Length: 405
Image (cartoon, rainbow, N blue to C red; front, side, top):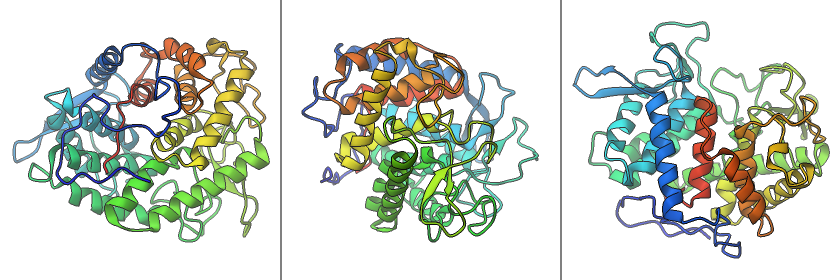
């Protein structure tokens, strides 16, 4: 059961416009037991701080409209990646009820996106843009996660501001959702890494995927916005693979690896990728990509109530609580699929803690654990990637995340 579609565009503010489906949970949403208005102000302050450090003006279009980009560092000289541009567009769309400049920033970020298409499509973004915006060693290829967040943010923008503005956000979203279909495996129905992947190639193909790209809540929104059941099939495929991999390789922790691949050519089952499959030695571990999976799954579970996303998050939350004996600083910066720290012991990183805090929202027995986790990261600021994940978590934890339908 989904919330009814609003008849007219309406501005969402940080006032908890949509109820989460976990109504049996302590404090309704299993949010930290502090004044939610105060919690929202913390979220606003964090977002402003993040934008100040990472959001940069990048010139002006010929028609006079400003361009903005998200720097992958806190310097004007750092590169922009499509992942970061997607986060920036999500944040500015969500914040529109509180930040009078949100639409200006959102539009400027999208102007930059439009100026950097991939070779294969005008409706996907080149994933790596140097500060000088010239050529680079990576070519003009896409990355699924950035494009998926950009498309979803356009649906949010349509609900925030309507379509009689600088952009027809709904039409722009529709084009980008259609383009995303070309980077879904034609048989596997899994998100591929980007438009550079040959579905039938080796070693990367339609069966090579990244669980942090299993954005179930986004896919539900795409299905509703377009009326296309294709996106429900994508959700189902992702959920089947994640359940199978965690069942076969990580039963108790319910961890997923950074990357998955087919067991063997022609297999219908999947396994964690081997080391250096794409990025590094931890490609088959719960590391710096997979840590986003609890944020994506919980972001679906608390709205849809789907047990396929809800139960893994409850299991994961119970496991990490027991693994650390309830010590939030006992969380390691990554685990192998058996739940052993990949660096030999606790090495606290807020990027990992915020995902576990969000997962705790799904379990009515984890209120105190979630509170303890929240206290460790809500004021942290360690860099672009860390800040973005903390911010995504803050929106969920404070009841300020919403869906464009």
